[in-house]
Image 1 (tube, rainbow, N blue to C red):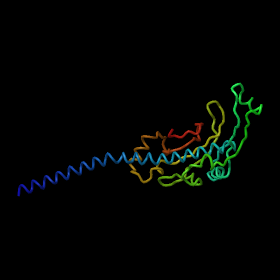
Image 2: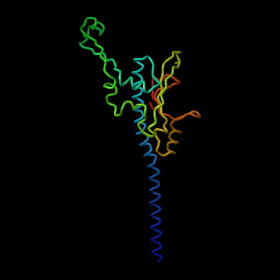
Image 3: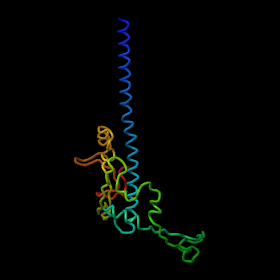
Image 4: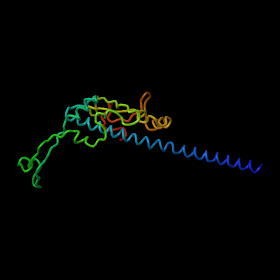
Amino acid sequence: MKKTITIIIQIALLAVIVLFAFLIVKGIQKPIEFDKKRDARFSQVVDRLEDIRTAQVEYKKQNGTYTPDFDTLVNFIQTKSMPVVRKEGFVPDTLTEKEAVELEIVTRDTIFIPYMDTLFKDIKYKFSNIRQIPVGTKAKFAMDTATVMTGSKVRVKVFEAKVSTWDILDGLDEQLIINYNANKYKLDEGEEPVLKVGSLKEATNNAGNWE
């Protein structure tokens, strides 16, 4: 009888040890898996923000300003073309390119190629969906434009496109999202953690806040 009880106790203790080991491993793996999923989602959103930046830069080249409207931006990229200077000929070492052009040794010709066949020919999504984040809640980016004053007193056009990290990470462990946001973003009261490109407050050369 005593032997049976001893065996039962040993089995129970072994089960407890296995359970604790499982919980410890799970506790370690949980944040690791969160980091992997977070990085994968952020990478997709960053790619989309970079496409928005590329489109806005091209829009400004042709229109002199940025647009706060995604419909306008999508229509521009889908219907307009980018100018490409094609050069033929070889510039001799004894001449500048300008001199070679004047002597007609080198010729230049500007051709126009649709944006969808150049800058955006390799995208893996429907371009009209550029306003939508590809992960999480599938929320839409918020986008706006402004004019700001630089430190040298020059007024410059700026734009900003952003999305809440809560929307990006929706469905993952809530406490780990809270921990990440608190550690990653130093925010004033009432501010929301976001992934964004550009800024409405200062001239940043359209940098992303992940860069």
